[in-house]
Length: 145
Ligand code: RB5
Image 1 (cartoon, rainbow, N blue to C red):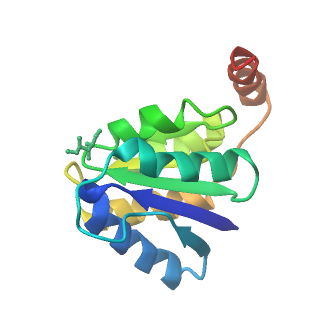
Image 2: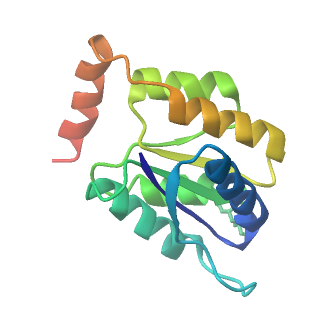
């Protein structure tokens, strides 16, 4: 599995924590996050991750900003991306089982690093259930035209 990860300045610390987790889990990733502490605009940092997942270059994407909201709104504009904004472990599992989400968004100002680690681990390790959920996901894809 190859993961693309990014954040804005508001998600910098949690992005570093999650990259450390990916290292521990031996999961390959590419970091598209800011390289300086200058203020940046979150859409510019969500887009390369969303496009990388949509193109198939990456299997999954992880996006972090202050709330996760701006990142998730941006990512979901890209055709083929199903980005889930998640701040609990139950939803992390459910969005993989039911929505086949391929991008995860979280807010650094919303949750702590321990919970974020559990969310990411669960989200990366849970398979899509398919079946009736596949029919529903296909209906979302049809909306993209
Ligand atoms: C940046 O101040 C903040 O707006 C951003 O990190 C994010 O929360 C946007 O949705």
